[in-house]
Length: 134
Image (cartoon, rainbow, N blue to C red; front, side):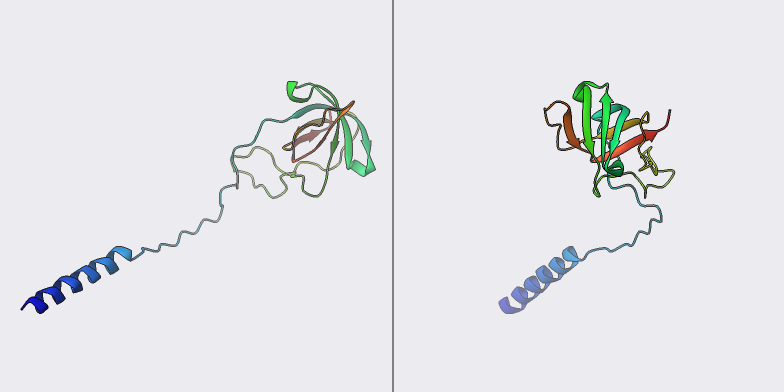
């Protein structure tokens, strides 16, 4: 009798454990997945392009924001984000920013790794939010 009760109790515990471990899998298909990061940092550099070197790989900007006020050389590389794959309708307001820099263009650039204190300052662009002709 004791063995039967013990067997029933153990069987019920194992059954409850299996039910509790069952995962409910639901497949959600979203044709327009959200952007990886919908929160963007404020631009580090905002101003006008004064000089363009190395076919747009380096630009000298006269920045007007406190984070980098004055002239700053900004390096553009293959990792710099120009929001080319950002679709309309997402929460990111920047789409297909031009890679063609020209003297006089207004730019807004985010530098994640910080600005090197030199004269002029230097930094590597993480993202270019705006590159517009005036």
